[in-house]
Amino acid sequence: MNERSIVVGLDLGSHRVTVVAAERDARGALRVLGLGTVPSEGVRKGVVVGFEPAVAAIRAAVDEAERASGLEIRSVFAKVTGDHFRAVRSEGVHAKEGGSREITPEDLAQVVRVARSLQLPAGYRILHTLPLDYTLDGRSGVKDPVGMDGVRLQADVLLILGESTVLENAAKAVEKAGLAVEGLVFSPLATALAALEEDEREGGVILMDLGAGTTEILVIHDGAPCHAEVLPLGGANVTRDLSIGLGVTLADAERLKLDHASVLPGAEDADERHAIHQVGRDAERFVTARTLHSIVAPRVRELLELAWERAQRSDAARRHAAGVVLCGGGALLPGLPELAAQLFDRSVRLAAPLDTTGLIAELQSPRYTPTVGLLHYGAHRLDLAGGEGASPRGLGGALRRFFRADPRRAK
Image (cartoon, rainbow, N blue to C red; front, side, top):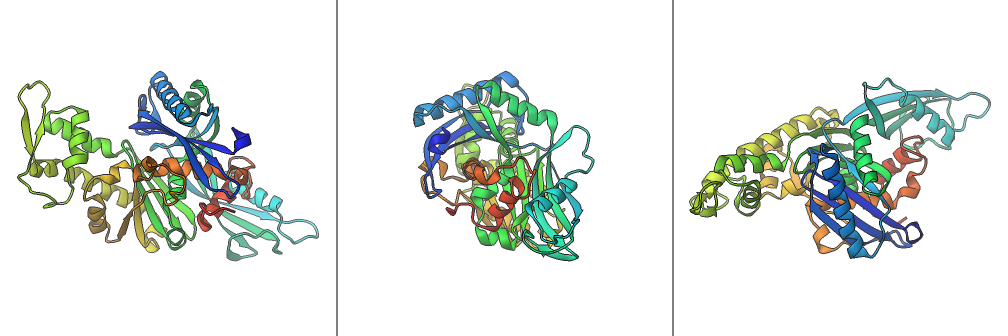
């Protein structure tokens, strides 16, 4: 696989498991070779809760992608999420010794190591380290101090922490399916790589990924992620409300939600009727658009308001975020972007993957934005060499450059 510059992303979602394999050409452009997507089993709210069913779903998605691509897939970059994740700000200070005052990559590595040395919550480990800013001899706002002269270097970093056992179980499920894990990637970071325009990353934006089991929030300011949260709520909650309220199966509730429900009043004829088959009843019955709206709209409003409240915990979101970018399958509900714009009093954009060159039509949808982001992440793996945050010019530094310069542009 490596000889052909192949990168494979694995999206272990609560609704579907998706595997996509792509090839990177000499210019850095990606061409999708194969896609496999199957219903998810053993995953709830982004976390593996049934080991063998999750392994079987991963294997089925991989088999499908292998048949489509003609490849033998041996390793993947796997997306991870869940409300166990925490984003923590930390600072590190390093004073140069000796005669040289020039800041070296080793100095950056040392100051980031200091920032990573804080006492972690019990049972947690650092998954990503994202340098935000450096201060050199009291002058803040330095983006890359290597080569500059100074004595006292300070780093401001964002640490993405995950519960160790949850991450280990995700990796173990992938490995039990016969795959090597090239990297676990916090889902909102992958999504941002595929969803955000350069001016959004620089000017400030709130990214919300509405999945089936989770809603992920990432605040970007001045080219860097500065706040992240994951809510254990998503589109599946709306589907469940419809299933209970109408007495239909989850599959029928999902169909009604996507085909006929709207979160905006008056979006369609309120008396328009749609056929339903209630569990335990032989006769066909009907539900009006008004009834669908009365069930769906309150839950969606509640979800958006909660996501907005969580985003506002970030000072950057309150002061600098100019707009909101939505993606994920949950954002496809008719009227949802318009409702979000009303609630947030911000411009709202529904984001599919921005770089569609080489993407098959099915992947050019907001529901696949995180998966495509994994491809961008993996395609820049050479830039990420150096380990999970061990060096600001390794993982953290490369992610920083991804946000500050278009990651989809060939280098």
